[in-house]
Length: 78
Image (cartoon, rainbow, N blue to C red; front, side):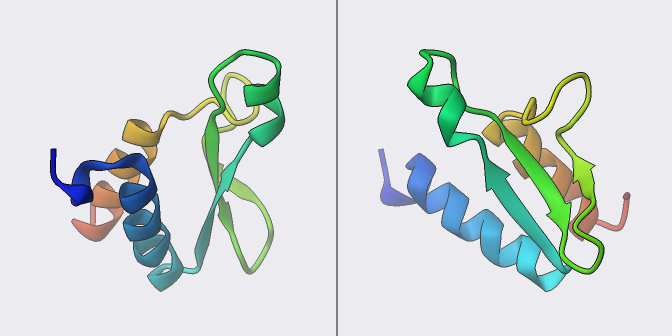
């Protein structure tokens, strides 16, 4: 497995992409403590509004889903 496939590396790469679009990736650390997988959400910096990952519940997007959302954003599909 190469380093670029580690979750920490993926997250750093996604945060750089998100920053280009004025977005921040948030992670629910508290959920991890309770034994459930921690989810993610994408927030718009200008308005602090969650634009992805809050339906059906807060921090419901997985790392793969956030990556797909950012890929679609870069491709001009969003």
